Length: 145
Image 1 (spheres, rainbow, N blue to C red):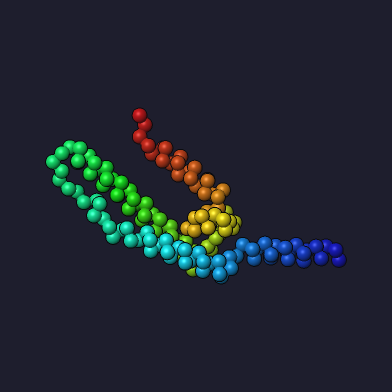
Image 2: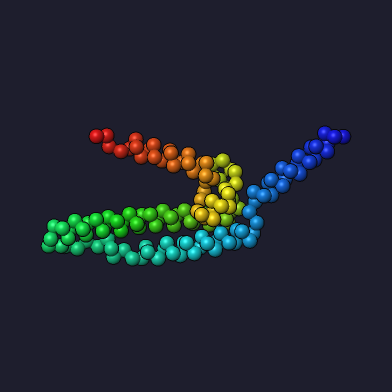
């Protein structure tokens, strides 16, 4: 008799934990609005590619400065394009019901993390693992001097 009560209590606690993991509709709407605003903000600079234009400069210093500015503009465009991909992926996760769940360990991503990084696909622990793997791969690809 006691074991049946304990089993029911255990199942109830598991159900409560599961329900805590599922983000409620108002929270999802809040994050959807944030992500859509971020998407709009990041897509606008992509239309301003004038900074990449190559201009003939008579002075060597002007050419070097122009090349540096162009490189910075290209890197910014690449960064914006990556962020747009991340934001769109987060919006897709909201649509398919997986937003707020880590893609690696299937545990909930804390609301504190999502408030700071609404496009987050991984919990803090898994993000650290992913960052370490990315850094290791970059080091392996770097030319040896």
